[in-house]
Amino acid sequence: MISSSTIAEPASGASFEQLALPLLPSLLRHALWLTQNEAEAEDLAQEALSKALRAFDSFTPGTNFKAWIFRILRNTFLTTRTAIAATRTTFLEDSEEIEAATSTSPTPEETVLQLDNAAAVQHALAQLPPHLRDCLLLCDVEELKYKEIAGILDLPIGTVMSRISRARAALRAQLQPHFGGRQ
Amino acid sequence: MNTATEHLQPGQIDAFADRELSPEQARAVQQHLAACHPCSLQLLATIELKQAAAEAGRRLSPSPAMLARLAAQLHQNAPAKPLPDAKPQAKRVLSFARPNFLWPALTAALLLIAISLTTWSVRHTRNTLSAELLDQHLATLSPAATPQVLSTDRHTVKPWFEGKLPFSFNLPEPASLPAGTTLKGADLTYIGDHPAAQLLFTVGKHQVSVFVAQQSSSAAPADSTRSGFTLRSTTAGDLRLIAVGDVDPPQLDRLLSSLVSVQSAH
Image 1 (cartoon, each protein chain N blue to C red):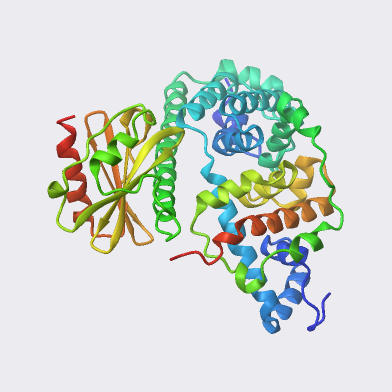
Image 2: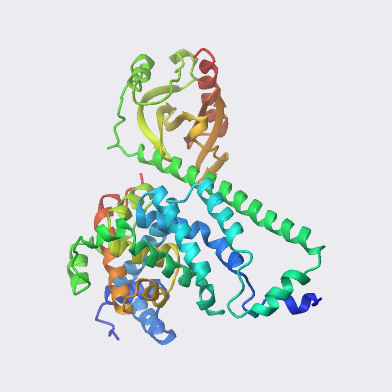
């Protein structure tokens, strides 16, 4: 028999289950945003978890497990019918449009918001083009770093930055009626 | 880097708000902000938008049932999975060598995780529901927000919901409402994915919303106070009634009681 000390987990500490369990709400939430459908989101999260479990040997202990499993979720999503349909929708890629987007935005004084209407913000988020929304959600909701987002989305870090800026500019434009709207 | 007369670029402000700048870059931005009011306002707006987006993004949350199913799948498939740097041989030995007395502890630990997850889900759902109801109430406070059915007459408001809701409810006579309380109108709304009635009352100079939903389709929000608004809930038969407003909690309770008392006649 081996002693309990020899069966201790390695320095990284945790098993797949221990690492994945706290992330289930985040994974499902992001899957919901990606698919906009509860059944599809659950299928997507389940498939991503299965793939992640099979590929767990390739995870490097000490690196960000959340970024790793979100990349698997994202790649799994890209093979779904919803994602394939979405890629047929062309969008203006991340060029010099930040300037144009911000020029139509409210003035700084107007943009000091009192955004107490979370439902309006959620609606505005839902209206964003998916490629901008994904970046913003990974940054603001999942609190991932630009570098991690770039890894998840397989994009240059500069593209991530421009997408986040464009997403916020678009949100501001959509939410203009709510600026300073508290009674 | 910008001089004092040159404004920050939107990308710089975003990166600063997202804590993505190096310490040196962040110091330079801070120096500029200290002398530039428009850029400071822009940063404040960005931080507020970032917080609002985070809050709104989290409102789209999975149901406890979805979470439970996924957690069960994880329990079923994951426990035997070795760590990336664990030696397979050691794992095999481990599976035979683990003393039997560890299994109750392991089972208890798994149970604890499952209970924690469920508790977290319930609390999270309740908080999300409270925030959602408060948002819906706030949306009715704008002078531009006209109720879908604008009437003080219960015989107008109640029939308006026929065919719109999968349930029915009663409204009290005006004289049976607490003193100073009048029906103003109502909206058809949704709590989660389920239709509900949002009854709008005036209590003195204050507005109060009472959401009427089926118990089976809505979780019970915790009685709470947020941003000066109080939320109270009760049940009557199959119905759940939730009042939201900036009046004293006893006033909300009296309004709820008057509504509960007429549901028995339903």
